Image 1: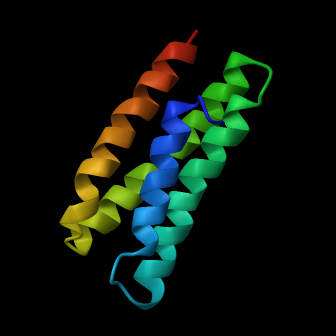
Image 2: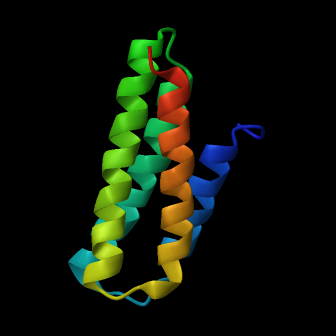
Amino acid sequence: MKNFRCYQIAKDLYKQAQLVPLKGEPKDQLIRATLSVCLNLVEGSARPTQKDRRRFFYTALSSLREVQALIVLHELNGLGCAADMLGAHVYKLIMAVKT
C-alpha cells in the first residue's frame, strides 16, 4: 500500500475529515464516505481482472462525489482541494485500467 499513491491521498483525506468541526449525521456521513473511498481503492487494487478493478475504482469515485457534495453543502473549504486532487487521481486510475 505504501506505493499506491491514490490510496495514500485518500487516507490523508480520511484523516483530515476526522478533524472537521461538524457534528452528528453530517460528520458521520463524511467519515463513512471517506472511509469508503479508501476501502474501495484497496479492494479494487487486489482484484484479478481489469473489469473488477474498474468497478471498485468507480465505486471509490462515487463515494468521493458524496464527500465533495458534503464539502459544498457544509462549506468545508479546507477539504475541497484535497478532494479535488483525489478525484483527479482516481479518475486517472480508472482510465488506466479501462479496456
